[in-house]
Length: 356
View (cartoon, one colour):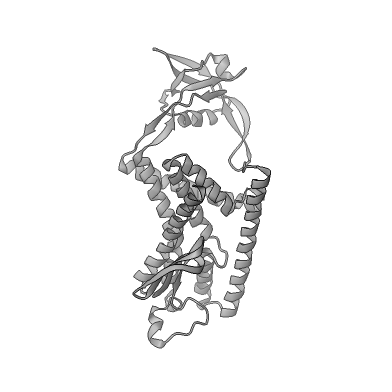
């Protein structure tokens, strides 16, 4: 189940990425020779028109091979109009950028469908009041439901916590539904130091309550779903970029980097929890794939974009020798990173340690 879920997830995301390159290459007049899901030896394939469509043995990537893409490739004069390297910079940029762009657009579409279908949201119903907490001192009880704070309605748990976290030391008027009566209670969140998702410490307000776990299904109309889907995609894209920066700054520890084993495990776990979890995970990984591919590392799409930027500034491309050297450096870096990620995966399997 875990293996099948991961293959489905990776297969879809690789297909979406390569489809972006393929569609824009074709539409801009570049001849596509091969469209492959996977690397390495060919498993199955068939040629339609000028393109051979393949499924290859190693399911950890894919590629679109275009005419004239390889340095030093010999071309007939009549074929140069259809060759990638003979296209203007703007066309090559669009072709390269379209892969990551398709991954990000795909994630947004998945989020739109998820929010249209309906997602469970946690209700602001109290399941536990801590010992010696502001909530306990103010008289909150298990089973109380918070319906408003400072005159603003509260419909779900995260709306409530957002207000509380932003208000350390500030008295808040809580509107509480208790059985058949509605009461108001004044509570001042105490200042506490917690860690954010990157392990950094920050101060927030807390009142000392836990949710009862009650949920409701929240469905959005198509326009709201589109707006929320785009916003969610933007938020996760930004978090991915911030995470990369903090990893470089060593704020996020290097042992949190995961490789294919971790993706296989998480894909299976999310699939076992239901289709909603699996597709949400797919959207997040799709965004990660899109953003990471835009890093300015030779061999990645971002590296190709960097070469195009240099070509635009110099008004001529880098020499084939310089390009080849850069590609080798980029490949060595990616292989090193993959080996390190695989080492982390194996150590997590041996030690049972989980990512914080």
